Length: 510
Ligand code: GAP
Image (tube, rainbow, N blue to C red):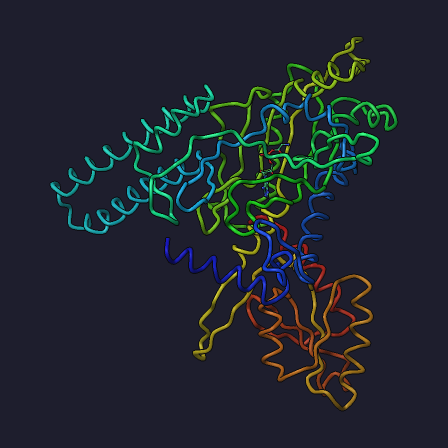
């Protein structure tokens, strides 16, 4: 774990040093759980967005896009259940004055026991090479003991959460002896529910301002526009509406960098289906979305499903696609079969019909919905943590490289004159101007060529094109591949087709 923490710190530092992610308002000492994307971060983020939009909207004739406003009528959040139930249980330590999510304190405690089990098994399996029955039995007994403890904590915790029994959650924290990591004491307040929505006022106070909320998800903007899109786009069920946009949550705990933020971006798609067909479509989207993620990170062991046993009141099936971040497997995307809960609730609260006339069945109904909902920032983090590598090279030197898949890389090509004279900069700029029509490129003439290659490795540029003396003789350049560091000589007119081919290949799941 210590190694993973160390690794994660390096990734965060690298992201800042090279202009991917900065702490927000840094010159004013920052704001917790709010981040800004720098010059490279915005490129990577845009590439992820475009890839999602293309896969979901462009490649599906029955899915269209939407860009709804962040501010919406406050009753929408009453109908959706967010005003009454979008809460996290929080607890304060009276000595450190720090606030925690009570459920996370318990989950972390359970995680520590799981880590112990893994360590125990790992240690024993090393010694099992010479099979020792006594050791085998002892390890087995300890694992069973730990597992029984985890099961009993989980059972009590789920029961307390289901019954909203906040007193028992506090009791559990006390009985487990969980201490505040800052003060080291068990001096806890009672557990209280804390609503995660940010609110503000719309209109001047003199006129009597209304409380409005910053949307905590983009999904509701889709639901309330369901009929507008269906009618104006003549959409036939099954069809989907996709949206990318900001969402805001007043998260109690702020940690793990951009994994859990107070302002973040979601990419959501609501797929409207016939009642009774939702589980078929749920299974379809579950597989589709997993396939999509695996085109981003080709190591399939980094992903897994986590099917929900305890379902939210509006869902009849739900799963998370989890990714193995340096801090463990965590939710990347949620896929939920939301029944007709949202449309029915908006129908009830607005008094307007939100039904679809199905010409094949000859009847009207409130469609059921299967939702795919992914955090853009979390994909960004998965790409970054998966890409960061420190390599020892054969000559004994080291390089830091970001192995970002070429199709997502902020810059596709760096164009470099070997030296800053003999017409090389001019020739390089000519090539740059051509390539820039199609790709985000960078021009760099400062420092020795080796250092420039390292700089491009560190920001994940898949190709470096270098103009040298030979360029003027035969119109060729060297093209260096980030992954292999191999250079080939290539005709200037072939650069674009080579880059295109490699970008295409980088998307393919092997
Ligand atoms: N409309 C359903 C919905 O919002 P969710 O599981 O609460 O479901 C969906 O959120 C996704 O949004 C998550 O899987 C995660 O990727 C992302 N997400 C949620 N809260 C986040 C936060 N505080 N910071 C960054 N991403 C977040």
